[in-house]
Image 1: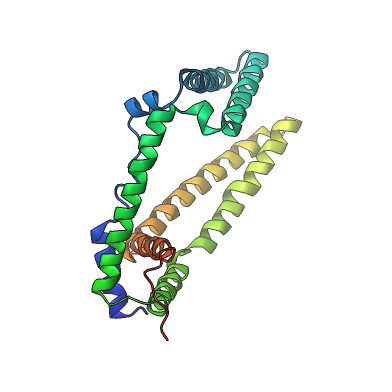
Image 2 (image 1 turned 45 degrees about the vertical axis):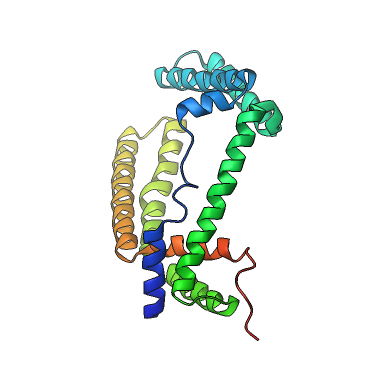
Length: 230
């Protein structure tokens, strides 16, 4: 059970939405202007190669070309991942973006501090107690039906699918392989249904609001505004 104070703080923090600006992604136009032409071209080539490779896999043709396109896309992505920002970004636009994000982050901390101070969470010890309540609730509700999902996935999807692959390799007992496919499909449906039920339970318990509050506390702990009690 959580305290009434916890419920008040969680509601207020979610309504204040301190992370709203930080979560905003770049628009497509901003992304196109942000990257240098060479880096953007390489990324688009890798994306096109991946799409073409996927189409060829679906059509079950040109296996060699599919492998070649996949290798090309992988190499390009590895190169882009290892390059520094000076290779990827337009320096002027990137610097402007970083300054804007720092401003958004400082505004985020101000909003978090406003909520915590209003409810007298003004010391390290009080914030720690609030965090412990938050983590305890998250741990209690984060895995409802997890054991059942695991059992269904193992019994109705993983094991039958392995058996089906074995049937395909030896190319025999087609009637049994058709039965396996039916079992796998039923298992997939059950897993999807349970995932939906789990999602509904998490929402009803306020799980995502708890996560939001925990993130806010973690961010605020980096500031020097939480004083230790004597």
